[in-house]
Amino acid sequence: MKIPSTDMITVKCGSHIAGRMILSPERLMVFEYDANWLKNGFALSPFFLPLKAGAMTARREPFHGNFGVFADSLPDGWGNLLLDRVLRKYGLDPASLTTIQRLSLVGNNGMGALTYEPAFAVSEPQALEDLNEIAAEVEMIMNDQAYMESVDELYRQAGSSAGARPKVLIMHEGEHWLVKFASSMDPDNIGEIEFEYSQRARRAGIEMPETRLFEGKYFGVKRFDREGEERIHMISAAGLLHADFRVPSLDYTELIKATRALTGSVVEVEKMYRLMAFNVLIGNNDDHARNFSFIYKKGEWKCSPAYDLLPSVGMNGEHCTAVAGSGRPDEGDMLRVAAQCSIENVRAKEIIAEVGRSL
Image 1: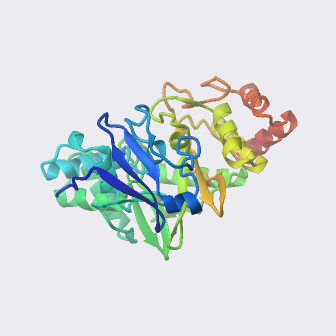
Image 2 (image 1 turned 90 degrees about the vertical axis):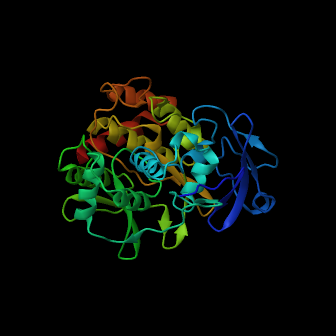
Image 3 (image 1 turned 60 degrees about the vertical axis):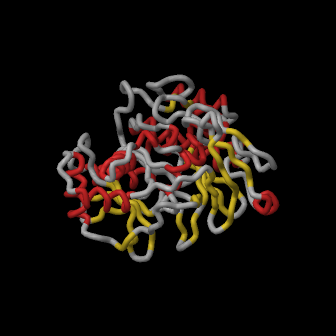
């Protein structure tokens, strides 16, 4: 394995060049929109990369000198574990890679519409394979027993998907799907549990992607960043707001106000409020900033369909995203969020009641 040595990377959105990026001597990413993109494109990250001419330099934190929207493209958790093992297999020190080299490793394998050139890795999800075999390989890797070939193949299949749980990207019946497997911390029936809560969320009026249980036990979700061969631009709340998703760093008040500022839509604001109510009522404490996203379609920003919805302990038994300052919220805290976000009290109570009845 030879990692590209380059000081510049080209960022594409779909088939169009959006801009170019270099690493400054201070190891901060510097991005500039392409002239044609300035005429016909949109802001990839409206709050931190507005659509304007000239070079823009990233802050040091929270993404180690990277812009949030590009940090979203990088693997996390399971993906990082695989990448580090692949690099070490070829005698490379993961710590020696620059951010530009890591984005080159993503290539066209990232979630959303962004791709990077020069690209070290260029591949697409494969047709549905034997998920039981993949699950066995996942378990071996988690137990440090996998063959080196398994690490290479699983890294290719994982793409740059985020999150701690093992997962692969597949094609099923001509559609793009993401399939999850149990981590060492999960119960054996975690797939069935997540599928059940995806159904509950749908009954609660939350916009959900299509979900299913593969082999009766592996939770799968149809990707909302793909429509046929079209790639849909997306950004997480962490990337949009430059919020550190590894620690509690966000409040639903901020998240809902950002939703209003980004979308200008009461409908989208209520979507996010409903999602907050669902997370609170089911005890989903792992509601960190990367578990909310927005998509850009037909010239408009909207909340993405919801994902990663199931009860979880979180950090110290508290919500990662606070509710009006509370990590252990009740209905009063949810109503305070509504008041702070200009949602009528009556409407907020209706939404909370609707979610509660669905459970």
